Amino acid sequence: MEGLLTRCRVLPTLATCSCQPSRYVPGRFHHCAPGRRQRLVLSRVFQPQNLREDQVLSLEGKVSDLTCKSQRLMLQVGLIYPASPGCYHLLPYTVRALEKLVRVIDQEMQAIGGQKVNMPSLSPAELWQATNRWNLMGKELLRVRDRHGKEYCLGPTHEEAITALVASQKQLSYKQLPLLLYQVTRKFRDEPRPRFGLLRGREFYMKDMYTFDASPEAAWQTYSLVCDAYCSLFHRLGLQFVKVQADVGSIGGTMSHEFQLPVDVGEDRLAICPSCSFSANVETLDLSQMNCPACQSPLTETKGIEVGHTFYLGTKYSSIFNAQFTNFQGKPCLAEMGCYGLGVTRILAAAIEVLSTEDCIRWPHLLAPYQVCLVPPKKGSKEAAAAELTGHLYDHITEAVPQLCGEVLLDDRTHLTIGNRLKDARKLGYPYVIIAGKRALEDPAYFEVWCQNTGEVVFLTKEGLVELLTQVQTV
Ligand code: ATP
Ligand code: MG
Image (tube, rainbow, N blue to C red):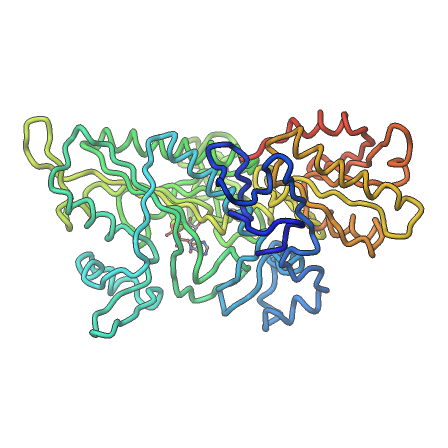
């Protein structure tokens, strides 16, 4: 980590910029502290960049499996690196984007009263035997045995664990309900066909929330509250989605919805009514059902990537583990439950899948690993005199636009032409690429700005740039 930032010895973290006073670590070099402003430089980022298509193919072994755009682009620009089938190293850019995604998810979950927890990945077999899922889940469950011969699985989901946890709290009162507990953790599933990179892994991040309510009516309210929070999340990410009626699968319960991003590589088939709001995963429909059950219009079919799933569980798990609360009459009652998943790593890859072109990654603007890439002139070129100006511009932006502190990367590979570096920057999809070319030598200096999410290219002065960048939202 040391040395990524020029002149910086100790970094609190690379992933977040701690420029708010409350997060400042006294006594440490701090890349946003006044007078010690550091520049993030591209040449030091750990990122095996610019792999040719054939190099990427050989990374994954079997060429036929490499069939989706997000997987190819993410490997090519060094966002992920394969470790074993369905398992990937998440490289620095990806970790930054994921951390941003988790921040947006936290905001949405906490806005509806969610409390974040973190449960162990090792989940004792007894819990799963109690619900019979130790058998039902079959080979998908990754099982391990400890030195004492005790069996565990690596958690593919946590209904058992959370319900046992809540059941162990003997003093739970109706006054504490609804209880909304969630976590963002790694999940393990021995998928029969892991593929499409982060879209279907064997080890992946999921946000899973579990809710406990005092009555079915209250639990329905919570259900719609969480669904609304999911809608808000996808709106904020700028992702077009459909909420469809879904099968309850091995998780169970009485009602369920999936949040799907419509796109051809999706593995789910969705039936959507063009005339009313009905939409369903075809798994839930009778195959002969070609018309909308609500308005009888012919249904249209599309493919989708499942990015979220909500379940109304009722007392399926609380009755097994005896997860109770005391009601207003002091009587013990079973909690009414819901569970709600979001595929965190899958959302990231799915967003890249739907937003990118064949050659260039496009990110939801909130999630771009860095918002700005500054490209100084090539060493020895006619414009080389503008190099210092680019450095000053870097400092000026991060000072004048506080939310961009830690979000600006300087492409210091000045042995390469501007054109080559622009190509890389376009592929990586920084929302703003700023080039100090010929016009940077004019008085006043003009910088060429590629606004990648809108496709505009404009020339702006330093002041114009600050005005533009002040609008950038970060999380
Ligand atoms: P799928 O039908 O795609 O296998 P699922 O219905 O089994 O998924 P859930 O149990 O509903 O998955 O899990 C909640 C969320 O976790 C899913 O909506 C999805 O976004 C994500 N997810 C599930 N399996 C994977 C996986 N193998 N890799 C990445 N994300 C996954
Ligand atoms: Mg599902």
